[in-house]
Structure formats: C-alpha cells, structure tokens
Length: 322
Image (cartoon, rainbow, N blue to C red; front, top):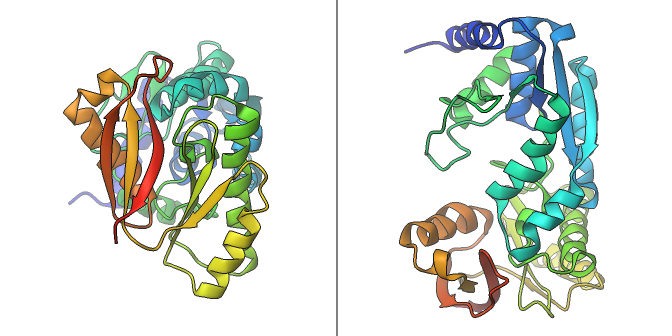
C-alpha cells in the first residue's frame, strides 16, 4: 500500500509537470481540500508562483468561514484575493436549488475570470461527486486530489501539520448557507435572508453553549410565501438547549415556522418534469443531496410541479412520520 509520504511526492511531481512551472491559481475556500492543495502547490512550485482566489457570497458565506480563509492564508503566507459572487449566485438559484451549477458559474466561473488564463487548481476529490470520477485536467482546471477520498486527504493534512477550524455546519462537508435553502431564491430579501440569518444564528448559539455537533443547519422549506425552518442538530441536544434554539430562531422575522427535528420525516417535494421523470436524479437528490444534511431519517413524496419557473425542485412541506 502506498504511504502518505509517497502520495504527497507523487502529487508534488504531478503539479510541477502539469503546471509546467508556470504561475497557478488555487480556488480557495478555506476548507480542508483547498488548503491541502494550496500547501502542496507552494511546496511544488514555490510561494511566489501560487496565488489564491476566494469567492465571497457576503451574508450567504459563514462569518467563521471567512475568518478561517484569512487566518489560513496568513499561516501559509498565501497570496490571497477575495472577489464577490453574490450576484451570480442569486441569479443561478432564482429558479430552484442547484449547487453544482452554482459552483460552476458563481464560484469557479468567477475564479476563472480572475485567473486570466492561469491554470486553476481545485480541491475536488472522490467525495465531491458522490463516487463519480471526473476529469483531472479540463478547460483550465486541474484537480490534484481527484483520486483521493476524505480520509486520505486528512492524512496528508496531518502529515503536513495543517489544522482546519471547522465552521460547525458539518464534520464531513461544509459549504455556504444557501445549500440549506430547499426552494427557489425567488426573493433574496426574504428566502435568502431566512437561510442566512437562521444558519448563522444556530451556529452562534451552539458555539456559545460549547456544544460539539456533528451536524448543524436550518433547512428553509415551504411554499414561496412561507418560510418553514427545519432545525437539524446531531447529536440531539437536551431539551433546555433545544428550547433556547427554537426561541431564538423564532425571532428571525423571515421565518414563519420553526420545527426542531427529532423524529423521521417525509419531505413533500415538487420537481420539474425533467427531474421528476429521471429516477437516477431523484435517487441522487434523496440519498446524496438531502439525507446527509438531515439529522433524522428522511423519506420523499414526489409531486410534478405545474410551475414553469421551477427548474429543479422545491420542498413545499413535510410530515413527521416517527
């Protein structure tokens, strides 16, 4: 079995070969994967040839995540530039949740524009596409970690002495707040604000209480004229903390209803015809997109939407089934 040191050496050689010793840009999120890529690129090419670009989504980015980006870039002495992607993100998500499209357009698309022809390194790996492999080098993007899983990447980070401060959203995969908006971002000042404020508030409460969660988010569901917040915290807090979380979240003006999940639920989902008729797409959404971010077992009842403006899906309601 190949050792961690050998894996690192192989990646270092490949980075040098593929970059041809030219300046590169890392699409930098401040998470484990992009930090490992940054450290390896610096080791392979030298600090002066490695730049990093972070796309900020303003209130849709976690405040702790933005602080992490600044702290890690300083620790690595990484040349960092922060650019804005909120406008592109809101445009992409206007017709329904679309994380992959958002990453492609609002994040990587903005980074590519900023890179101005330089090779872009990303932290994509086996864990990102739910076991499906992509291309290692394509259209100006290079993914040095593509053939590795999270455990292997963590071992490389440990070997290099890299420590990442978790945002608190998930022990496994953290992202932006809008991945928790399970309906169209039709009105950013209403739907987007609910996702932004509720999720920031939840993590703030848990941090104040010193509560070590594996998962912590508020899913924003319901019809377009009603925001229902489904609170997911695992392990399940004691009753006193649950009551405090609910009490504080009810102060969020854009939330009409708050439910702390402690039993299995059925999600009522409307989908456009393309997704509704595609069994593979529905299965991926249920098992790869939704269940990992819920603290309780979920079932799905699918409905075909009549809303022609819905390009993906919308969780319109839920039922407690436990």
